[in-house]
Length: 314
Image (tube, rainbow, N blue to C red; front, side):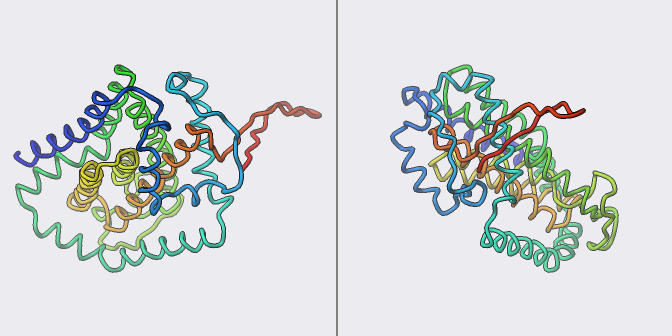
């Protein structure tokens, strides 16, 4: 179980990065840290804000001070804006955005044709004790272990009043809910693809039937969602490498255990990455008072009609 000990050590080092930074620096709002601008510049090539948030609208909100983070109202407002910003993104995509999306979808299909059967055959024909042990240890990082990682950031952040850890905790929770709790389960139901341990063919589909289907991988979605949030909040390369390596090993373990096709894992990884990065992009703007999504709730009355309406401004 040497591989298990190495993975546990990697996780401890990942968590230690946030703790060390908090203990060495004074507590202050995340948006006001001296390296915030540098981190934003470094992340520019993979900033998804233009893809997920309308470019010309603003909430006009004031930056959230660290003490406001603990307000349930502020967290609720941010969660609502995350949900609208991510799930409502296609409503304001430009032609270029749809072209990018089409290219990504075509890439996933190409991965399926090129690697689904070869990877399944290779992994099933080359099972070893070392790989058995490694995959058993790493696979839960796409389910219960990922929740433990999120919880560790939350406990550390709230216990020591560290804004960065709190933000990682909240962004990871929202990315998990949106990616693993809504988007991927919906696609599983709509696509209805058979798992490799259910069918010898990768092109067997039963749309709109069942929820425990193959495409996309829920474990890969969750692992990459959390890894992307941690990476987006860090300016240390080794943290990103560790996070994405663990996520990649989760995806490999699902193929190794014959639970998913390679294209399932690829799609899950893309969903988790886009949602994780998107949530961080939206919330960073909100924390700086530059939020791009305005959400208001108003009562609705009429003849025989009683209810409410959600008004979303982009």
